[in-house]
Length: 147
Image 1 (cartoon, rainbow, N blue to C red):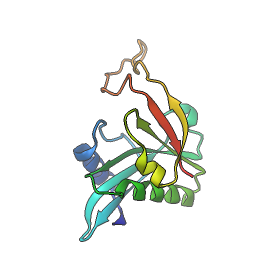
Image 2 (cartoon, helix red, strand yellow):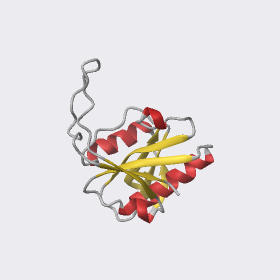
Image 3 (cartoon, rainbow, N blue to C red):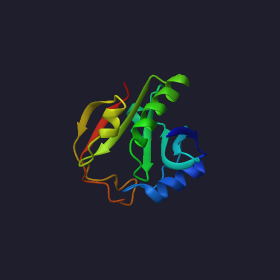
């Protein structure tokens, strides 16, 4: 297994095909992939600005999606590489979230640590800004940070 560059449109298509519960993210700063021989893409990570506005301080990035075809250790490889790339670009912090029921084994394998446990949100819809529920409301989440 080795790292490969992945174009935005290719990463989004991979997420569309393989992610369990989210569509591809709208934007990104960079994406990267894990491939085996002969360069068959097995997993991708998409890194962008933090979704939570209060965390978007200019020095923090967020792994907004990872998706894998089930290849062992691919996500751990990507989480480690995403942190190295973010540091090389001058960022000081990299975060991500897991949903309740996800073990976080890939994150622990890459040395990440739990920062906080977030309770379920009732949803993002407000009268002033109507939004469609995407099926991920009412789910507790865990906030992780790269080492």
